[in-house]
Amino acid sequence: MLDMSNVYNILASPPILKKKLSPHLEAMAKWLVESGRMRIEAEEMGNFVRLNLPQYGIDLTFSRREINDPKLFPETKKLLQNILSLKGDKSAAADKAMEYMREMRGRITRKQPINPDTEEKLARAFVQCNHPAVIELLLHEKTEIFITFSHNIGDMLNMEGWQHHGKNSGMQASGPLQNAVYISCGGDPFVPEKKLQYSGDGFAALARMMIIGAQETGHFADMIRAANGRVTSRHSADLYGKAKPKVKEARRQDISDLENIIELFKSLSLEKIMEAERALKFFREKHGSRSRRLRKFLLSRLLYSIFLIRARGKNTFLKKMPKSKYPATSIYSMLLDMRFNLEPKADVYARENPEEEEGIACIEALARVPQQAIKWGREIAESLMPRLYHIYYSEVIPECQRYLRERGVH
Image (cartoon, rainbow, N blue to C red):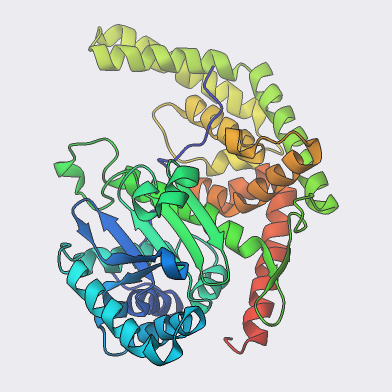
């Protein structure tokens, strides 16, 4: 039996990277690049520095653009000046701000700059990882987008953040001075397939980036904001972490229905087909006799054809599954991935209070709807987590759109 865990190496549709997107998405990708709010760590290359001044309670990051671009650095200087004014001598704040700006400009020159083509591709990939209204809201609120090519987000965090979240694959943070999304790729997303040396590079890293990006931006979308931008609640839970009844019931029903589907497919011999596929894979990899491979291939396809005839009906999502050499294994992997994301398991989610733990489960599950949509396709996500899917796309997204309209963005 396969392990129930999160799948990171599949996308229903690869993102468009080398040519322009639709006018709206392309404009947002350009906005993200030119805003300087995208912070990138790519092995020895990087485009941001950290300003850590514990004596003033300051721990901020600024990109190369924000401290050098004539259109952006005045705003950076003003931000620093305002913070320093609140912390000490107002008359010296302007000079101090310039001093720190010069110091950061010196440090950023020690880093190899990010290739503009890489920056453009990352921006295009990012704006495709969730609904346009969510991305536009992130940009409107000047959210910092941290993207690292490493396996965790630790190299982008301060010491305190590293101790608590450094081993995470992704994170979303909100605060008085910071809205931020952190994403780890686990490799270089843009290594050509012919030049791959590490399994985490290339498409695997690109898929991981978008899947984590979808989940973390899903958390951002979940927040309900007042007219002044202050977060007042979530769609999934209240500010005390207690699950909202509607989301709580939706998640429970989606889990129950999915478990019924898994049990139905087992009763229709899905596991027996998987055994045949494993044998076929073994013979292929070990270069066994052609006749034995052929027999295993015919057996697996015969069993799978019988399974499809018996399993279809209401399970129309089977028609949307991506093509695979081992289709039964892919279906089962997808089902277990869906099940895991409806009830993700991790030490960080554990609580002694059952209500708090369920609240966290609801927060996580709702934020993972867009992740499952870009991973398996919206039709499959809608079929297998229909209630949470409906809440996300019929309530969360319209709330983001309403907020943007009220702020005069749309």
